[in-house]
Amino acid sequence: MSRLFVEQLTVIDCAFLDAARGLVGESWIVDIELDGDLDDQSMVLDFGEVKKRCKQLIDQSVDHSLLVPAQATELMVQNGDDSLHLLFRSDLGAIEHISPAASVTLIDTDEIDAEAVCAHLRPLLHAQLPESVRAVNLQLRTEVIPGAYYHYAHGLKKHAGACQRIAHGHRSKIEIRVDGERDAALEMRVASGWLDVYLGSREDLVARGNGRMRFAYTAPQGHYQLALPESHVDLFDGDTTVERIAEHLARLLAPLRPGRTVQVRAYEGVMKGAVAEQRG
Image (tube, rainbow, N blue to C red; front, side):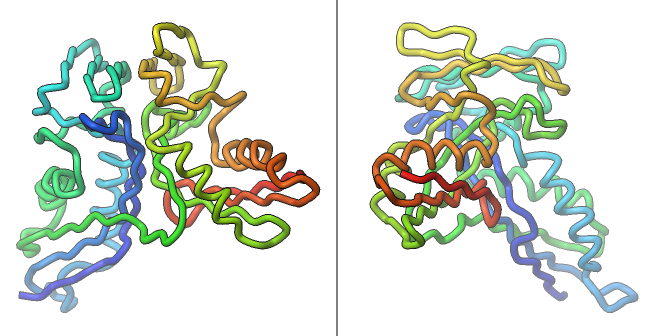
């Protein structure tokens, strides 16, 4: 039996519900190994087929999804007509999520972590592969980031694809330069202020009171609502695309460095993002 591997097959940009942290944006890099017999091409499986079958399944299931621990005692689930209504009681406060069912992935665990997601994906992947592939081994890992980073969740209602889902997210590093030089203090300021934050558009805010905010919008895939503690939210004027995030941070930080040029390099997950500059 032989073993084939593909490192960084894809990146899962998602959000999950956690009893301690609340709503968490995450980015996991996916590595995969396939154990099996060699075919008539002397291959376990052609690399193109690995990407076609495995990457596609991962991208269409857990990527840009809200991952929910189905066995958690903190969770209540109500099924509607092609929709799910979730209520999750975290240490930070209650999180309520209403969306089309396809936006949510219920995982048979009481806590979402990398291994629970791997256990969910392995049988799904194995079913997509030839019988000659005997075993599927997955590893989910986070990007090694020596400096500052933050976890955020958001939704982009104008997006035609899965980014329209109101609660998906990313684990993202942040690089800030002042007159061309990295400014670690500003980077840590952003990271410490955006610990497990929800970035919400002010125009989608439909209710606010008793320390809570409710966001709602209708997008091509259906109707979405999300209610969560106000302490978990940073409001934006406009959309929360990474381009807008970079602009928002540049405007916020430039006054802290008067007379100098602040450049923000904001990442959306792994190895992608946007740049914005502002003169202080």
